[in-house]
Length: 286
Image (cartoon, rainbow, N blue to C red; front, side, top):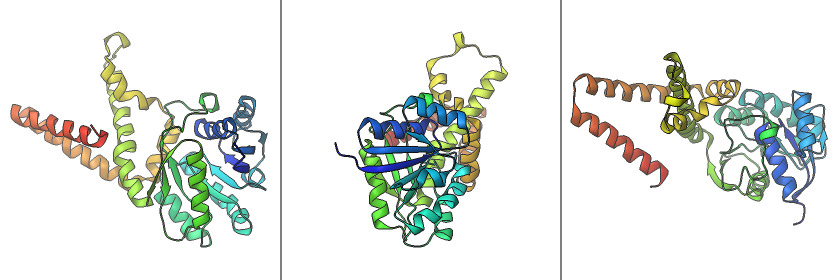
């Protein structure tokens, strides 16, 4: 397969960034992958693992001469990386994207600060695990994963196509979505579940629950609570309103359950769980 990209810069080489570098290199899609980030130790680890070809001292250095820069930092650090790369993008052919789990704040920043047609196109590959760090990166992480691509007026059509080509080339399934809809949907399907998993895990720890008396259902429900706290802190802060709205919705349903249980309303409880089953089957496509 011929190289699709001469040079790709990856800013942030944790699980997602390292996996992207490995995927591009394994498929022969890139000549050079340059990495930048806050921690030299992490960059050196990614270099040793073959996820990147060289370590740069800054996002600008990594992106110098690149076709594409991918910001794979925690959500709260995306805006500063965007600011650092804007000059290169607006003075040349560099296209910039990101992998953050929130989009409205990030894309609104691009609208305010980048010249139209914008060379920044937000994206969100829905892949990963509760683990973090380049040592957990794999070349097939994005294979079959959904990648949400920003669908907003004012983006450069050629930039959009390049970002779509990037994620499509590593096996992702592409879905266009506007940033506000993205954040509302992800608040309910990703961010709130993590908040709930953290609460469930903490509740179990309060009563001294031990592994030998914990079933598979609890482990499945709380697996994501093992994710990096700083990552989820940033996600919730950058999607605050949608997460708060989702928390209110969950509180309402829990209060309804509490009232049914206190009243001993067996039929109401059955309907409560039936509604949940229908919701699960509908959203999971079963």
